[in-house]
Amino acid sequence: MPPRKGLTAARSFLRTRTRVGLKRSSSSVVTALQMTVCAVGAYAFAEQVLGHEGPLFAATSSMIALGFSRDPRLRRVLEVGLGCTLGIALGDLLLTLFGTGIWQAALVLFVSILLARFLDSGTIFTTQLGLQSLLVVLLPAPDGGPFTRSADAIVGGLFALAITILLPRDPRREPKTNVRGLLGELAGVLRENASALTSSDATAAWHALVRARNSQPELDRLTSSMRAAKEIARISPAFWRHRSELGSLGGSIDSIDLAIRNSRVFSRRLTSAINHAALTDEAITSLSQALEDTADAVDVLSRALSTSDEAERRANLRSARGALAAVATDLHPRTLHVQRLEGEALILLFRPLIVDLLEATGLSHEEAAVYLPRL
Image 1 (cartoon, rainbow, N blue to C red):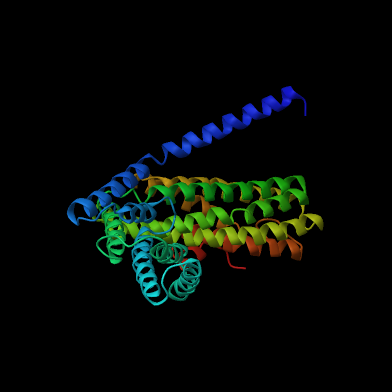
Image 2 (image 1 turned 90 degrees about the vertical axis):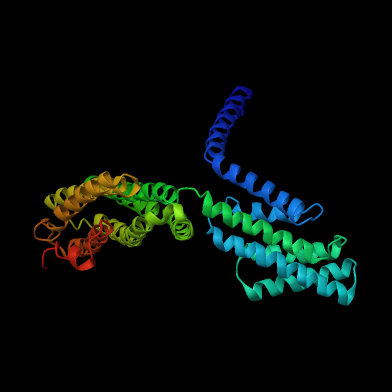
């Protein structure tokens, strides 16, 4: 690579990394502040109130419990507290039986990891139990006895729980951001299918299928953030009023999950239909328009589920429901000018996708299915 091109590429890389890093840092200011207050507060409490000397485990356990993980915080707090306590207790027991040394440390770590995996599948729990039991063997016991460190870990966990309850982040923010991204991908898949159908390009339809499959990590992130949001709304009085909204959002997400799965099946069948020229020109025009209209309705649904304004959410849900209902009422092979069996199968695969999206707007399955014409 010529030096000038290499320098340009390096500058572009640095600009991108700087922009991404600044965005990530700016979105983490509140969490960083919470972690700082929590860690310093737990350390000060253990030192000044409990009289522990250098209570490092109070600060570290609180930081681990809060952290930047997407897992629900209450589970992390319990994993850290219980992991530290059991780890120190196990380490102290084995220390009494076998003494200190390299092979003793290896034995303690091995037994601790196996015990942690037996008790719980959580990664944090396993790490904490193994690490704390190992430290007990390798480090000298504090003046207050070995269980002083266990008490420090509990203090850190309790401070993390208090921060979560008293100074929580808005639990709706992350799932709403994630659902907007996921629905954006679904709308993109539908539009790529419409374009592939119009141009009779089976390769483009296959690319839409690949895009639909690649949306799974986005769906996993949404599921995880939704689980954490429900937990925060359940334990934090400041957000109890949002439990109903999060419950509705959770129901919509379940339906969106099914819609994405159906979009994969539809895209795969569309590839075959294009390859076999299974649709007439009239059918191509009508079905591609139905796909475009569905994509537009998904965009409206995205705005509805990602906004925090109740009036705007309801208005957009009604609009999305009306647009999807209009598509659903035309989903009959005869209405869409479909004649061959393979084309009819394509319509049959598109119908459940529309029902899933109608359910995502708040309808029951029976209410959504009513819009479909009888076959």
